[in-house]
Image 1 (cartoon, rainbow, N blue to C red):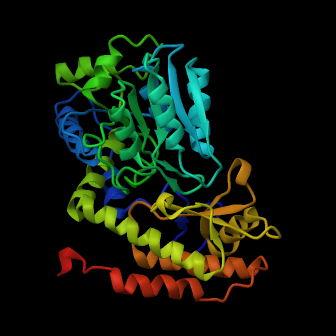
Image 2: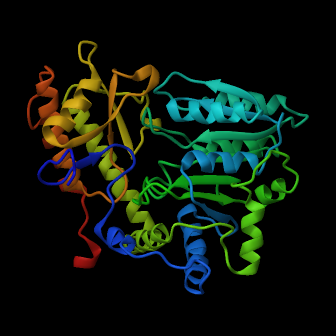
Image 3: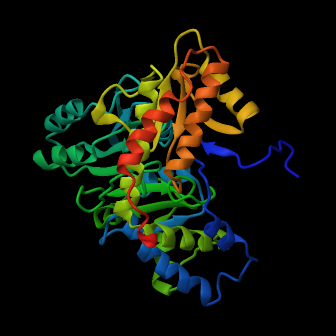
Length: 401
């Protein structure tokens, strides 16, 4: 028995971990197997090919590592760079801050480009740094595609244009933890050298698989990178890929079956349709926030995220109390404000296996919580704004036409 039982379902609207669909839960409900038997390598081979589709790459090499996004970060860095290498990294929120901390602790020389939280990466500064670096001392550009703490999405295509314009050979490393499988992501087209994501976000799995995809250029860089790595070493995986057994150490059998089911669901819906659904959910949430008379933490329309919305609250309200009361009274889980925006924002996650009616239930709950904490919201205002938009934009379910 759950020691915090509440009737009905928990309304999980944090920006990860997210709701796990029933087919995925059923797929994972199985006993352990011998991963050296023919069955697991056969499944792994197909999974590796299918994982490339969510990154939109035909040339990348994927690694499915039993870890979190943080481990995937470390894998991306240590396999391609050497201690003392100069890199450019953008500080725009809590998760980009944590990645920069990791970069510094791994002894890279980090040029930190900091923006106000709620703004995107300052790509004008990047352009200046790349233009000035005629000696090509910058070895990598690291950027978080979607900053989950502030609800900010960065323009990756522009980063690639800057590198190409100045014919700069720096590696392009991207954290796509809260974007891949939900936002438009094009690894090959945008010339991304290493992209990574985590199973607990838009893939709608439990935490436990960090998926890293490396371009041919990144694999070549790994041959000379001098950073120490053991558990995250791509070379160990590549050896087992050649042998046809795929795993240098024990994988989670249950998560592999879950990943198979999760990918099947994504492909059945169609990746472009998945991205369009997230676009609708993001737009509906922002319309609700506007109807409540509140503001989005994201400062410009060009940066808004379709996977998470960070909502600014008036100074007389502690957003932590909103999150606490939502869980205690309404069985609704919302995201806290983190670090320098703690107490100032709450976050609504709208990513993964989620539909429009589920979102409307969340928005109704948020309205009641806002009233509870003393904010004079008109009940139904945000739900009405979101409903009006969704009613005009939700397509028929293809399998039921």
